[in-house]
Structure formats: C-alpha cells, structure tokens
Length: 174
Picture (cartoon, rainbow, N blue to C red):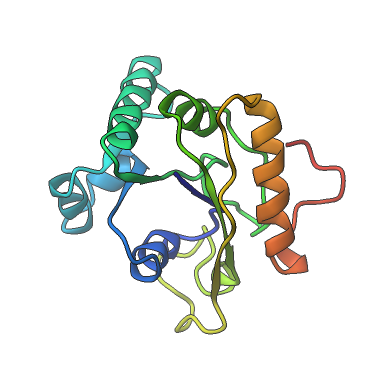
C-alpha cells in the first residue's frame, strides 16, 4: 500500500506517471463522476468512497483489502483530503487498518512542491509544474504492530521527506 501526502489534484497523475506499476486508487466518489477522468478510473477498477456514508466506508474497506490480497497495489491518501495550505495534516485510521488486515507493508511517499503549482483552491495548474519530487521511502512493516504506532512512523517518514514549508507544525497531532 502506498500512502502519500495529498496537496493537489495533480498528485494522482504524478504518482501514476512516476511509480512503475499498476495501482488502484481509493478516491472520493465525486472524482469518478468527472467526465473522461472519472470514467477511466471506473473502467480501471479504482475504489470509490462516499466519505460521509458509513456503509460506503465499510465497502471501500472490504474492496481495498480484497484488492491488496489479490496482489495489487493500492494508493490512499491518509489525510483524507487535500491540504489547503500544503502542509501535512493528521492521518485517518482507515489506511492503517486496511494494511494491517491485508498483511501488507506500507510504502510512505513524500510528494514535494506540487502544492505550488496546483493548490487545492485552483481549478487548473497555475503554471507548468517544476522542481516536483516524489520520494518513495523504505517500506514499513505492519505485521504484528499497533496501527497507531505504524501511523505515527509513516507520518514521521513522510514529514521528514517534505520541504520545510510543507512539513507539519512541530508537535502536530498524528
């Protein structure tokens, strides 16, 4: 399971172009309704979630575990949504429960400087992205470990991989 920070609509395109393997994304249902992009994601079998619907959350959880157990990689943004100021935000628990239940390792990913080119408030990129870095960190084992401990470790790894202006505030709640 890949867990990157999330600051821009371009994060998905960047990950897809950078990581040399097929991945399934967990995406809010609204993205899958966008013509062309959403249709392609549905056709490719990406996993949709209705974030405020508990039943949908449980189905997404089951679908993600099945996808992981079938040997596929899953990308989920543990922050749950794009950061409005570009800084790393508190993680949700779901991705860590999924990886633990499926018995897979987590690959933390730091996406650096994408926020400058397409912040969450922009409908289109403000310029052609330059000096963007995607850092794939060493895998983190989840087997037999406390999910909160794994979350804290992954948060720290991603945070340390980001430029200072994107790092979480010192003492941020994980």
